[in-house]
Amino acid sequence: MNLCVIGTGYVGLVGAAIFAERGNKVVGVDINQEKIEKIRRGEMPIFETGLSEIVLKNIKDNKLSFTTSIKEGIKDAEVVMICVGTPQEDTGAADLSAVWAVAGEIGKNLNGYKVVVTKSTVPVGTNERIAKIVRENAPDRAEFDVASNPEFLREGQAVEDMRNSDRTVVGTSSPRAMEVLKKLYSDQISPIIECDLRSAEMIKYASNAFLATKISFINEIGQLCERAGADVSIVAKGMGMDKRIGYKFLNSSIGYGGSCFPKDVAALYKTSSDEAYDFKLLRSVMEVNDLQKNYFFKKITSMFGDNLSGFTYGILGLAFKNDTDDIRESVALKIVKMIRGNGGRLKVYDPAAMENTMRALGSDDIIYTKDMYDAVKDVDAVCILTEWSEFKNLDLDKTKSLMKKPVIFDGRNLLNQKEVEGAGFIYFAIGKRTNGYTEEADIIRTAVLQNGGNKHK
Image (cartoon, rainbow, N blue to C red; front, side):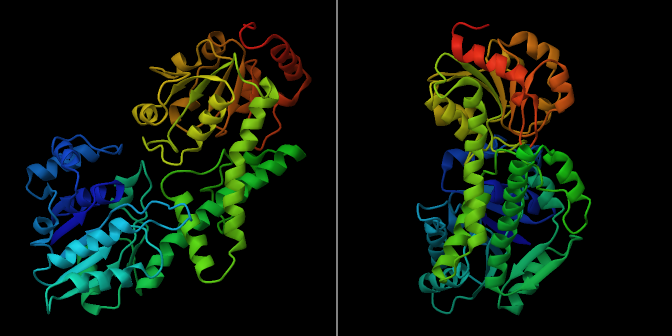
C-alpha cells in the first residue's frame, strides 16, 4: 500500500520505517528541512536502537522517502497518517494546533479517496473536528474517511513495539475505511479492536492513565512501607504474582515523567472537567506523582541540610527513563534543578541524554562527565535518577574510593540494599527502611552539617 506519514517524531518516524519494512511504500513528511536532510543521512532525531539501519535500508530499497511537502506526500497515498505532537497547554488540555493545521493542508491537497488516520494522542471528539476541517478545505466531491488509530509505543522500545504490538485499535464510522486499515495491518498477529472514533480516542488516554495510576499507587505503598518498616520491592513482587495485577509499573521510584503520562493524564482530567465530572482518582494520581520528587529531595536535605552550598552531587541519569534521550518532563531533571536551586554543585552523566540536558540546563554549576565513574569522583553523594541497566553494575568498592563520603540516594531502587550497605555506604532508597536512618548515618550527618561541604573529605 501507499502511505503518507506526517510528522517524524517517535510515532511518525518509527511508524514510517516499520510500515516500509513490511513492504509498503511510505513517504514521510515534516516541515523541518534540516531534520529531513539528517534523517536521509541516517542521523535520527530520536534515540531508538536499530532505527537508523531500518530507515537507511528502506530508503535504499526505494520503499521510504521524505519530503517537506504535504501535497507531494499525499499525492499517491491511500492512507494519510497524522503523527504530529500534541503538547500540554497550561490548562492541562492538549494543544491541537498542529493537528488542525495538518488537517487543513490534507483537505486542500486531496486528489482522490484517502483514509485520514490520526495516530497522534488526541482528546475525545478530535477526529470529528478533523473530518470537518478536511471537508471545509477539500475540493467539491472529494472523497475521504477519517479513522482513529492510536499508538502504544514505549520510548526506547518503539521499534519492537511497532513490530509486535499488543493490539491495534481502529476507530471509524466507515466500513470502507475499516477494510483499508485491516488490510494495512493484515500481516500482524495481534488482534484488531474495531470501534467508533470516540472509543478509540478514549482507549489511548484510559490506558496511559491506568498505568500512571499503578505507578502512583505503588509509590504511595512505598511511602507507607518506609514508615512501617516494610520493603516495597518485596511487596510489589508479592502483588505482581497475582495475574490480575501483574509486575509491570509496580516499581516504586521518584515518579513518572516523559512526553506521554504527564500530559495524557492531565488531558483526560481536563476532559472530565469539560464534561462536568470530577475525576477524583486522576487528581490524586497527579498529586502523588508531583509530590514524589519532593519526598526524595527531602532525603537529600535531611542528610546535608537545606542549604546545599559547598556540596557536590554525582547524578546518574537525566532522561525521563532508560533507553531514550528524551528529557521531556524528566523527574531526574526536576531533581537536578532542585539541587542546583538550593546551592548544590553537580556532576552529571547519562548514556544518551547529555546533549539534550546541556541545551536545556546550560553549564552553570553543572559538570558534564564522560562516564558514571567520572560523575562520582570527588562528590559528597551519588543520586541515581534514571534506571539505566549499566548503573545496576556500579562497582561499589571503586565508587566508594572515588567519593568524598559514601552516600547514595537511589531514586529507582536499582541497587541491592544488602550489597550497598555491606560495602559501607549510607544508603537511601524508595519505600525501604535503609541504614540512612541509623545512628551511623546520624554521626556522618552531624559531621557534614557541622563542617560543611568544602571542609569534609
